[in-house]
Length: 260
Image (cartoon, rainbow, N blue to C red):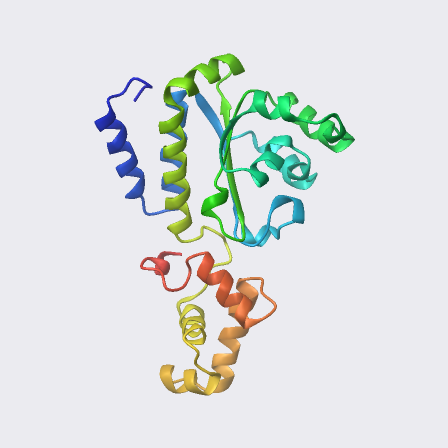
């Protein structure tokens, strides 16, 4: 597909991504699609519990990237997400914005040492021109955004020309991707076992431990053990928090949760 692809083919591409069965599959397909528009490096982040500036728990965040691993490690380890102007813009806005526009809006007081360091790291890895899309109106109580980095050799002016003619469909494709990924089971390594999933689902239905014992035919000590292990798997302090995190990560009450 190129940016001149007929509308029916572009709609077919959207249909294809809605049929994906895993986050990995959806991400690979989306990266391929965006590269055809000239954006060959992507960085997507989504947390249901917080925003970057409030130090979201990494256990609650989904991060997908096709940027160099060295950059991603520094971005997370050094907390650059707190200082990058594009992230601050995405926290306060919904939709798409050219990075040149973000820079133009940057107040001198916002150019802190942390911001200079974050932007210097991006420049060192060749991350200079692109667009950001915030999904703020699709994320109640959370934060989600994607950075689209232009292919090497394309200036910001080149990307702005692409966006002028194809920006609406690019933004639509990214919104569809976000909705699809939000509906798929988590790829996190701390996955629930079938029994842990079962007892959390019964808790979510309002059942007490004694009632769960009767429902699944197990002793109380066994049910309590499964709940404890489920809390550990979800990095949760309470069973209620484990239920919430398991639900958000689509590990319970999901059609294909058994695959997680």
